[in-house]
Image (tube, rainbow, N blue to C red; front, side):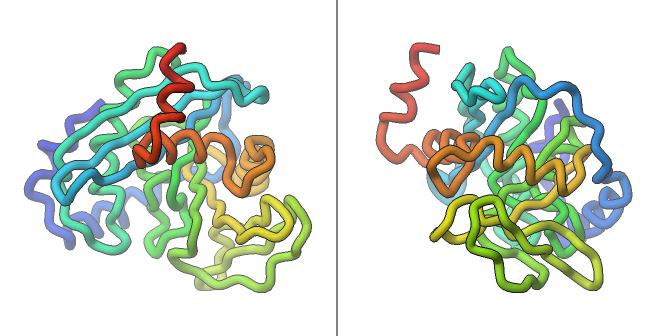
Length: 230
């Protein structure tokens, strides 16, 4: 994996935007997946203004049983700028991925894929850097417009931006707020929706996101206790 902490040490926001615009042409939203036997949730939390902590939890698929996890910490190499979050999070995610013995077949990232003003959210950026299929699973909208979301579990409405379908607003359970799903890399929107719903059990969030978010945020030790025996 590249050492982005060094590569991006002197990167300016203008240069980061230019990089996003250049990389966007390399993104594939055509299905190019292996047989998916493992899925991984990725989430990044910030312990303070200077330190990012990434958590990756690998689950079996379709059983959704935790198999392995990794936690990594790094100084944040880039300031907070809306739309440029991947430049804060990618270095520590790559460090965590390097620690895994099991390479996931599919990544589900807490954040956006192509549902981004320049079509390069965190899931897409990580997909391009690693070459791995990835999906963006966002809790709130970053860009685009959408109509009303049907109330039934698994129903969705398109997320549109400048005449382009960039994702879907998905109701994972009746009576809960929808999620914002978009292809990251090497996957289509319909297939991304199928895998997200296959990772949903009785909660709003897919199990990949729940595990990774629980470990990355450090809320309570029950998440780590459940993983210590792996």
